[in-house]
Length: 261
Ligand code: DGL
Image 1 (tube, rainbow, N blue to C red):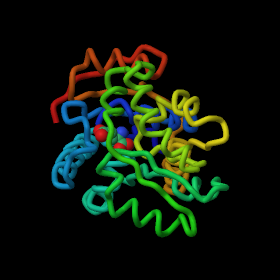
Image 2: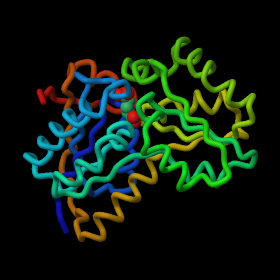
Image 3: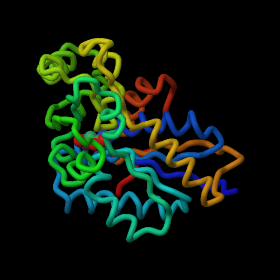
Image 4: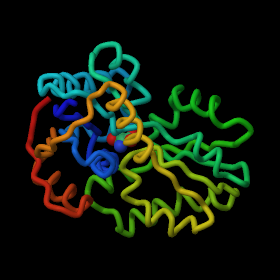
């Protein structure tokens, strides 16, 4: 038994989609969430820049004596998780696109991963595809301003719908029938995405898999909690903006604290 908190981080509010799954599956756990909004988006950053940001966040979590960390960000995971696991003692659970799932769901043999530009061009993603998508085509789509639109709470704006249509319609015309959401901001656009691609196309995110993996690790290490304390939210950006958008996305009032990292 271990009632210390779990650190969860992302470049911004996208990581809240993973946090929701963790809170659902592990209701006794307490979480500390960091949105690194002073440095969002991560999707256009280099490995060196990402290593610097993630190290600062994990140093902060270490000071807070967390028992485990979840990188609720595909971009941070694919570029930094190996180095972070070497550097820090606590278990680190990453978030990656669910390639195995889309490969098992497709009937047409054509699938897509929809992510940030950095994740789309990463070697890590290519390795996952080689390992888990035998005989299946995987189109890696990166590059849009959707993260920014979600950061502004614009999940239903005309610009968001227009951008989604521009990206998704050609995939559907091409016969893609299974899409992995490879950025944690996108599950907040799930209804809009499903509406555009239609009900015959599977749209899957990584939230459930990350929460299950976290439970497995905590259980194996005998670190599951039995008493929940208050969840805490931090942003390196503006607290007022974070509170407004996080409250909108989570559907309850969030009061985050500003930190400098
Ligand atoms: N939410 C992040 C991810 O899963 C990154 C978004 C961004 O900052 O570009 O990759």
